[in-house]
Amino acid sequence: MPSGRIEPFPGIAEVARVAGVSYMTVSRVINGRKGVSEDTRRRILRLLDEMGYRPNLLARALRTGRTRSIGVIGYANALRGPSNLLFSAQLAARAAGFSVTVITVADQQAEALSLAIAEMHERAVEAIILFSPYRSSGAALRRVRSTVPIVAIWGPEEIGIPVISYDHPQAAAMATQHLLDLGHPTVRHISGPTGWTGSDLRVVGWRDALSAAGREIPQVVVGDWQARSGYKAGCAILAEPDVSAVFISSDQMALGFMAAAHELGRRIPDDLSVVGYDNDPGSEYFSPPLTTVHQDFAVIGQRAFDVARSLIESPDKPPPDVTALVPELVIRATTGPYCPRA
Image 1 (tube, rainbow, N blue to C red):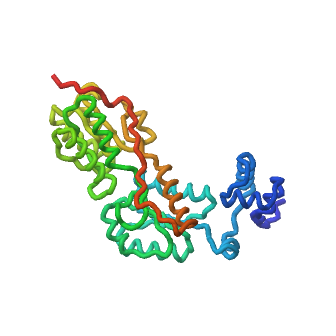
Image 2 (cartoon, one colour):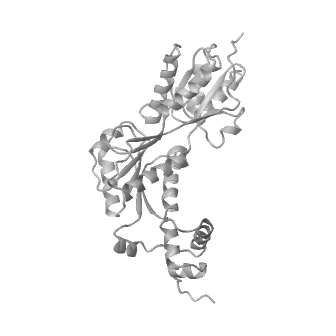
Image 3 (spheres, rainbow, N blue to C red):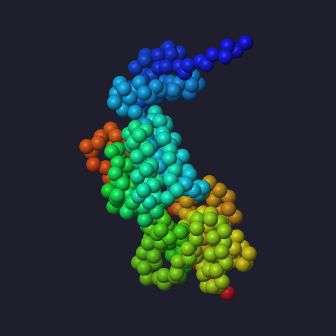
């Protein structure tokens, strides 16, 4: 019969006893230190999970003066990109033995950010990772004050804190140049919402690539990241019969655009080439499979945590202003040589 008594979580000593290693070996694994073989590390991590080990954060903080806690501030929306970035940053922190406090804000004005940061201070986090997709948030971030390091994901540049992002201008230029190299006279662009850092910088890269090639720069059509806006943009753009190549700022908008193209009798890639952005998990199963720019959200979250951790552990070392990750163009079946319509 169950006793009804709640069993306590095992401590490091109990995990060490079951693993047949020293207390110090388990401690090294928990704290991410060197000096433990990979096989032993894996075995201890498995036991920590199976035995339900939970670190005594209060005891650790009193003993070391550190909480090993990270704060993550996100923007409240249901889009896949922001959600995946928040999750990947949390996952990276937890894998390194840090606890994570998450706060979402309804907007990114200075008042909302200041309140969220103040709450993080009350919870004794050692650093904050902030998801900041809007260029307008730069002014707010310059006004907020924090006693712990802050790292921004997708933040605007030159805001006085480290920013982690993909090189959006380079990515857009790469996608546009791919279409120009296939012989297309010019490339139309469906952007994300105006004011999003990634969206605005992709417009810059697309425009710069066309300008450098001496090609016509068409008017940008603005979408909202969702498939429906891509569909509507497609219906408008493809009313012009000479459109042969389109670079689209998200795979979901590309999906809607391709549906519009199909309805209008445009054949992809025979007489219409399409490049998306993100490399969504389902993009390789579009019909046809989508050529797109790969944006790895797990890498962004991991890099943001790595920078935050370095600021905690080496506070005197100056961090990079911007860490621009190198994009990759994934070529599939939606792009092909220019073929003028009869």
